[in-house]
Structure formats: structure tokens, C-alpha cells
Length: 202
Ligand code: MG
Image (tube, rainbow, N blue to C red; front, side):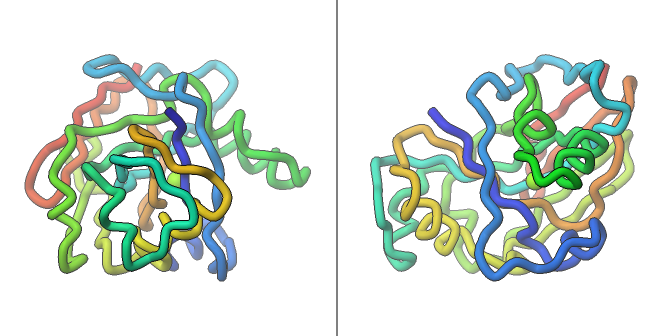
């Protein structure tokens, strides 16, 4: 199983980090060891002083595909949820400034939180909203229709480079509102009105 991730997929988030809006999806990977186990706390790693939450819609692939056309992409999604792409922002900034890959800042243990799976029907119409509460306060609110690259376009693009396999996960990028987490924080992710994950930060 692999975890493919899209960066800068919402104009407001690209702007908040001072990045240009890309013409092609920005792509990176997390290893499967990045997945945070169900009901486990997220432990802030010792190598970062600035871990950020990034709330994202996550797609699960249901069958093998390569060179998938956008109009057929929905057939490859077997479940949808929201999750967190935890990011060591200080380390990522250092790596970016040196032109180096992001993996250490994005793929460390526990950096991928995945909520409870829902039917892919929730994507129909693209009016889907999702949100993150930190300590009971709303900090991120996203709408699928605000994605620069839609789920279908993302699947078409990724499958030109990577054979998609059953069980692969795709993080589709975060809307605006990313920010730091510290030990003691409590994060809750919502897909529409359903709370799909709850994570304590240690
Ligand atoms: Mg992200």
C-alpha cells in the first residue's frame, strides 16, 4: 500500500504559505509506516518545533489502474474520508530552501491520520464540506469544489506515473487554515456532519 499526496490544491492555502498556484498537481509520498494507528495519540517528534495540522479529503483506491481517464476515475475510488497530513513545517522550510525532497518533513511516523471510511457517493455534486476542530474551535473548513485539481483529475494525473493499486490512499491537499499543534491539543475531523476522527496530541 502506498500513500500519495497532493500539495497546493487550494488557492487560499497556496497563498497563506507564499507559494504559487501550480498548473500541474504537486505530488509527494508518505511511506506506509506514516499511518497513525487507530485510537493512538499523535506524538510530536523530537526533530521539529513546528508541527502543523493539514486537514485533507482522503480517497481510497478500490482496484488496479494505470493511465486512468478523468471520466472513469470515479470507478477507482471505493471509499472517502478526511485525514491529517501532519507536517514538520520548520523542517519542510529548511528542505525547500535547499531544493531537497520533503519526505522527512511529511512522511515521519504517525504523520498520516485517516478517518472512518464513507461511501464515495459523498463526492457526488462536489458540494462536500469538511472541517477540523482544535480544542473545540473550528480551525479549517474546506469545500471539495474549491480544489484546483478535482479528485478525478488527481487520479488521472497520478496514474500516468504510478500504477494505482487496491488499498492505496490519496491525500488531496489542504485548504487554508493550517497551523501548529502542541502536546495537549485535541483534534477532531468532520466529513460533512460526521465526526470521522479524533486525535490527542502528546
Ligand atoms: Mg498536505
